[in-house]
Image (tube, rainbow, N blue to C red; front, side, top):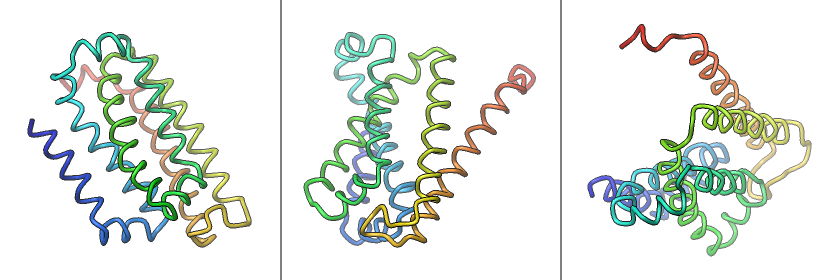
Length: 185
């Protein structure tokens, strides 16, 4: 119950107009801070829903694959430049962002992650490496504004943020591949 409260408080804090305006005024903060924090809020709230509706999650997401696909579709949508632009210009899309990221990404992620096999988890990491590299390349190399609400220099900064995140995921995968965890237990 405490995690549900923390998740709701995070969402309410991020929805406060001065906080939302500040975070959305810088493109990289909008994409790489506000959106992941909304997913994290849903991740925290997921435990409450798992306890209240255990049969639903077991029936709907027994092996973790449907939930992780929902998570990937939701996150992929919000990486698109058009989605970020719409969230800034349309109040309805902004509300959809604050609902979809916690509910359609955070909750399924928590429920699915423990159900996935290590190979499935690695496939998710490979997907994000490819997605973040492609989006980084798109944001860096496109000479025109992709988002009408942000400058081209902010777009390039976001692109480098995507590339840096992809590199960090590669480093993590290399670490897990070459380090024996049993030596540290």
